[in-house]
Image (cartoon, rainbow, N blue to C red; front, side, top):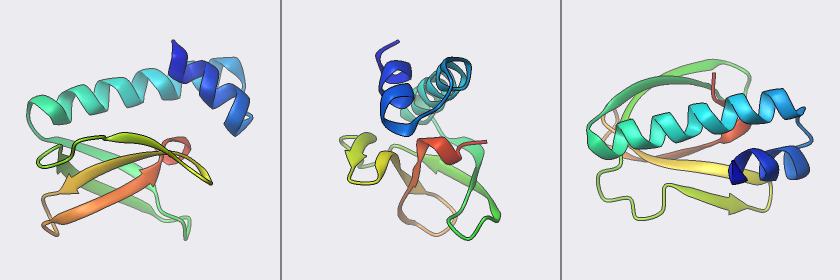
Amino acid sequence: MQLAHLLRSHEGMSWSLAQKKAWKTYKLIRKMADDQATFTYIKSDATPRIARGSMQGIRTPLFRSPSGYVIRYYDLGVKGTRSFHISRLV
């Protein structure tokens, strides 16, 4: 999996954790592309956030920012676009 290799080299994850995060990311993006998904990630202030999102209006859900790989999604709860680092997906 290409994403697992990128996570391992750029985020410094172990191979096992990189594969788990890559697979979880892939499944989440596929689910949000088809419908809506409920998922949890850790916010930057170290608190968990339970989100319900979709890919409504999002062209590139996965992109590389200067600080790492990020998932962008449309949050159905707040009716706006949000993003989080892949490494923070629970």
